Length: 113
Image 1: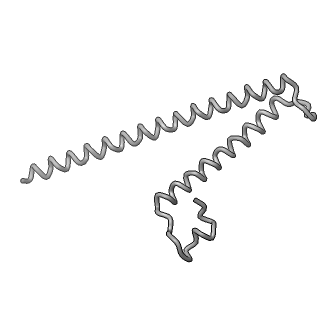
Image 2: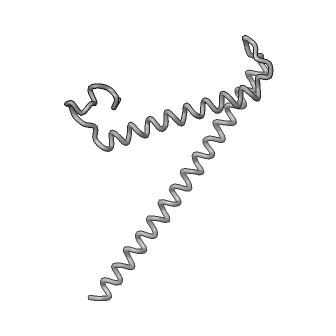
């Protein structure tokens, strides 16, 4: 879904639903994050592994680049899992507080009946 195309303008046709808009925004954020990741890995690994740029890479440079990229990918996965765990824990804690508050409110209401 391309919100910038003429077919998606407000001059006719169906307007995208809020969930479609959210999905498109999430997709664009993921693309931007991936591009940032690739750019960072490319710059850092190239700087670390290629000491004398030439028209081709030597086998040791290729191996270094492969290992470097793998390490960045693994580190990114670990960070993403940690963030997901933190978010999940935060949501669980919020849900528990909401349930406790609801229960306390119900007891208070029942106590007045």
